Length: 400
Ligand code: ADP
Ligand code: MG
Image (cartoon, rainbow, N blue to C red; front, side):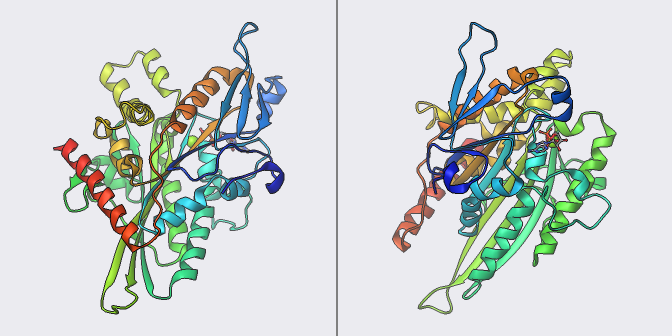
């Protein structure tokens, strides 16, 4: 639904449009850090309301730039505000209904992507997490909402949940739930004829009967990611992580007790590599292949988003299969599901250039229009499943 700052009484600058499109874009501005405050590295953004953000021009002769998104979260917004008003609840509801949902955090290193998705890594390392900690991120809070919904629905429907957690580093896929083995031999991304989608071969899929099982997956993956980070200086800013919850529902048909309607939905939580990586690798004088590999997924995601956002290119070739990340997100981006982009930015003057880049990228993503797919009645549901079939076939053809 639509969000209004006066309605919700939180530090967020309202909503320009209801969060009902297939791609929604919100911006989160982190608070100035202690270091920035000490250095008088002042804020260059303002919040006029209505999902708008105003960013100072880069020099005196440049006018301030105004951008509009679905929602803008000001620095005072809490982790709870994000889960309430960013639109994630609808993604979870749709995942239960059998859609592929994806939420991804985009932004430069240090802009708050990991904070938004998972909260500080210390929450998970070496101790049983305090469930009430205010810093728990979107993933943790989404799991609670998911189980709340499943408990309300269990009458004639059975749910089977499985979760996976992987990292893409240098175009290599590493299982965060089984990192030892996978680091020696990265996992392969393959096309499945049966599922009509890409999947990761031999990826651990953990059965999650209870909320605690999902939380354990999050904890385990976070711990393994932290270990990996020590192996290389800026590992975490160069890697992407994807935590996926697969939701299979089996529903007994109303009049035909022996007939079960099975649906397979999922939700991907994606913490992207720092958006500054593209330029950084170029300036570090890496070989083309190294540089390409490090940022390939991020670059290709950019191409896919740009193509989807351009009405002339939308029906043409979208280069999903050019990177590991976009292969794995193709079904969500292709319009079979819903996508939420959370663009994370720093308010500080010293980050102005990257901030404007992120705001531009996010504005482009907001232009993507795929028709909202909402199940209304059984006939509609049939049409919908045929549409998805067609999209899947398109994807398959491109792959062949
Ligand atoms: P990224 O994952 O984008 O590189 P992080 O999430 O690690 O960035 O955030 C960088 C630093 O800023 C961390 O110390 C984090 O705790 C802090 N931080 C980020 N966003 C917020 C926020 N909304 N409120 C408080 N601290 C934040
Ligand atoms: Mg991070």
